[in-house]
Length: 221
Image 1 (tube, rainbow, N blue to C red):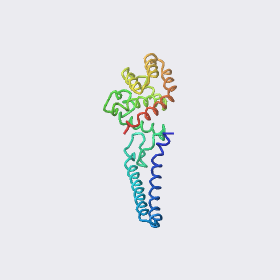
Image 2 (image 1 turned 45 degrees about the horizontal axis):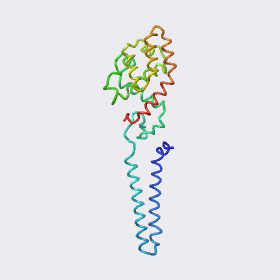
Image 3 (image 1 turned 90 degrees about the vertical axis):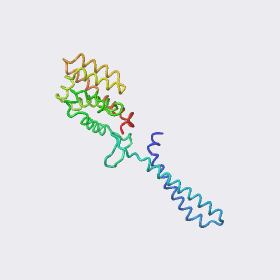
Image 4 (image 1 turned 180 degrees about the horizontal axis):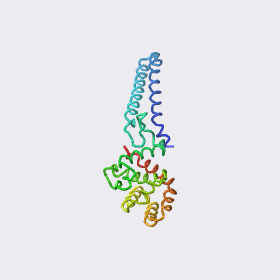
């Protein structure tokens, strides 16, 4: 209920401003001229002025509270404003993450071979993008499902595996991290098991990406 109210609050306030302004105009146009005493005329004018001021205050508030500062995941370039977080789809989030990867590395090979997840200059304030990069690296393996991408994971150095594990732990992962580290340490010689692990967790990773973004949405400005 509160989320619905919050979402529709700007519209409710805008309607209230319009009603107040129209009401003020009607008071000035009908009751005030027809008032049989000066007292009633003065009171009518005061009420109308107060209603006009209320409309102006609401209008100013709505103008100043516009969410126009671009959010990395929510900004709509066509409408020049941020969409509500409830309208954020995985398709859009994934597109933004794909762009993010191009800003932290020049290629998928570099992403897996360089210590990208340890480069604080590329991870945002408080390394906020770090878990998303790690999630995206794993998600793309399952999503693309091509040998060249699986090769990056199968030949990843222990340092890269540890960096991914640490990044996922930052997002609150525990069991997945343990399973990921275990399978990478014990099944290098059985690539199919590594693939099956990532493929089996694709839906889970997708959900965790969205949960992480929405939980930290205010950090992506």
